[in-house]
Length: 66
Image (cartoon, rainbow, N blue to C red; front, side, top):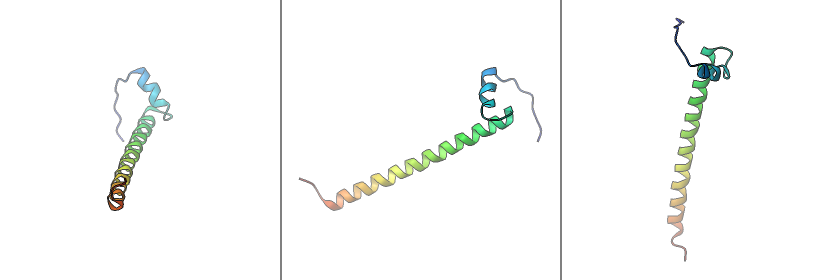
């Protein structure tokens, strides 16, 4: 894979190195972690939506509570 020389802040470099043995692998690991978090958030949102809809339907079927 071709490489590129870039300037990066030392703090950002240190952060990426916490995720991998070199800068490239650290960035890839950070990307994978972000994608997994996004996927988990979408699944959670879907689960919450389904729970809300089911709850509303059950409440509608049960009728008003007095």
